[in-house]
Image (cartoon, rainbow, N blue to C red; front, side, top):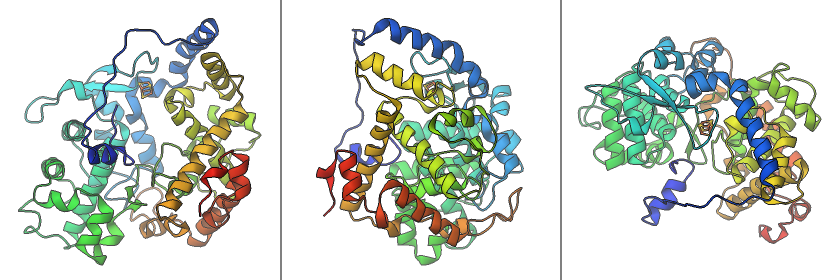
Length: 441
Ligand code: SF4
């Protein structure tokens, strides 16, 4: 597992901790082994079919559909479609560098890829192939269309312990600054940082990891780099609360945009919602009926109904993160809310329910909020970079941009629904969650 994103790697680094390795020889005990085995068999037999594309092409299966819909970050989020996307898709990987599927222990989906790349970009198979986020961050967002170079960048980022999303965003930021004259060849030590220069991207990953040359400026991410580089660069530094934006376009998936600004870890897609999964009666939308959400919603909708959909999804994902369960299996594998609650009960012996597990997620989200308030964040930090309020320069949603007034309104609705007036969890909300001791001063 990696600890590169959302600050965990920085915490470990500050303590001089390189890794935590665990080894065991005993089977973990569960409360009801037979019932757990029944649910495990159901997951084994059903989730791969529900998640066929992930099994066949990995997370990169989404590259072409996102590209068609204008949701593939390109050129530091200036565009949402990449004219060479087919060269970096999951299908292209399968036909070129893919050797076999891999995955986490006992997972029936096995979404990981193993790849083989020869000279001059030899990739150690143990690092696996690039996932969607890496393909977009080091690929389309830097306008690089060579899967072998992206696979090499993926290997290097993993070997150096860098988050490939932040790393790719930071390199795209540097490329845009270079093209706009804010960085010169003198600043880059002679590196030509035009978008599309794959070898320069690889060189920059190394420089960032080793804090050499321009890498020293970029190693702390785009927020701090822009502070040092000057105000003119700030509009190209795409981050929320210091965390670079994941590879999901918030001008298109607007509920996810609200999720980004409300996430306790900054721009984060891992306790969020993909609006595009709820625009029709898709299987995921069907599942939401169990929570009383009956109608699909347009991808760009930001009505109270969309914010409710976002919050329910987000709280469930916060719970799944607490339970260390994979979203691709438990959500996209259509395991369902009730079956998941049964799994927790049969593993732990607790007589729990979907309601209680939702509250686990809400407690985690609210504690994260309280922690951030204590550390000095305010509701002013719940904001999207200005670029997303301007339209794409080309592609299938070239007219689309966030509307500031609508976005601010949606933010207030989110606070209201969460019981966070002005962004601060109320006494009543903390009491309801049993964490009144966490009350901010
Ligand atoms: S557990 Fe999740 S991330 Fe791991 S291989 Fe399975 S689907 Fe992929």
